[in-house]
Image 1 (cartoon, helix red, strand yellow):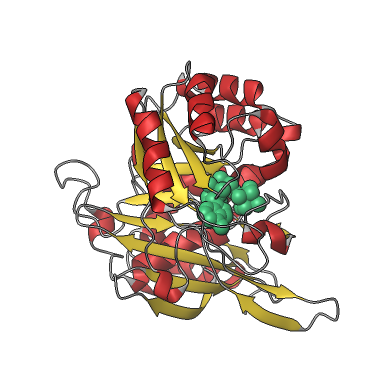
Image 2 (cartoon, helix red, strand yellow):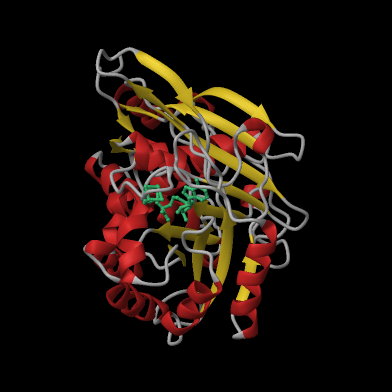
Length: 378
Ligand code: SAH
Ligand code: SF4
């Protein structure tokens, strides 16, 4: 008979599972064996773990489960972008997006249902905060995508294929879905460790990116606990404008944010920070803003990724015109900053960059319609 409150083994990183197994009187290699079954093979059935002792399998069946989030919708765009809507209970849903490209496949992962930070141009922010995702719900997005893309038991374990991650269906992960990853740091770090661990997904640190709106103390913790590639949502060239667009700036203003980026780079797997900059017509997209940015980031090795704003109802913002974006990029490029403009993908299934997904409840707890849009990035 199984217990009514089983432990979800997807909540553990390798050290965590070894410790939990020790509590059962089981050896570390057993924990690593089960890890590989779960994450390499995409296995959620203890009975299928044929090289695990029968007695241990029986014990695990009684007290544990391997339970990823449940996909309630699967959409495929004409450009190959695939989006899953995941039910995370209590009428909350989050999205995961897979973006195939010629030489890589990127999974865009959510960290929270909703977000408390309330950036002015973000539809997740407008939805408010529901709750943090558990480590199992975060790593479960990679677990599911691997399985549904047919990668489990195959490319995910192929660590010998030339440059480490090439040849895998999912070669890159970006924490750029719903939520602010650094506001859910403990669970995000557990999931990141699994992404990097050879007993789980074995991704290169350089191919796992956390995007943050700039929670400075948590940036320092991420650097110390699990440094991966860093993207920072800058979106403004001065404090007055950023205070308005990204309210967390009132707590951690640009001078502190730039210093935190420099500290992060001391331990980062890449030698630059990616600054994301949403292009809002007439708000932050003038030549003067571009020049102010060049001065702002002078001491931070960086690249820029300009994101054409993706509108949503009543946002109050418009996307900058293509010519304006080109001119803005030109000023950064002339100053020697590598600058790309994100292309919108998957918009026919509402998976386009800057669109956010989620299911919200009204005050009567009735489920109101799905607001789908999600952020996806590379
Ligand atoms: N909370 C994190 C990561 C998730 S949001 C962060 O803010 O960095 C991922 C990216 O999408 C951020 O750069 C965010 O500012 C941007 N974004 C949010 N809404 C957008 C929209 N409507 N159009 C374009 N980009 C948007
Ligand atoms: Fe939250 Fe990021 Fe949206 Fe800001 S942009 S509200 S931090 S998800």
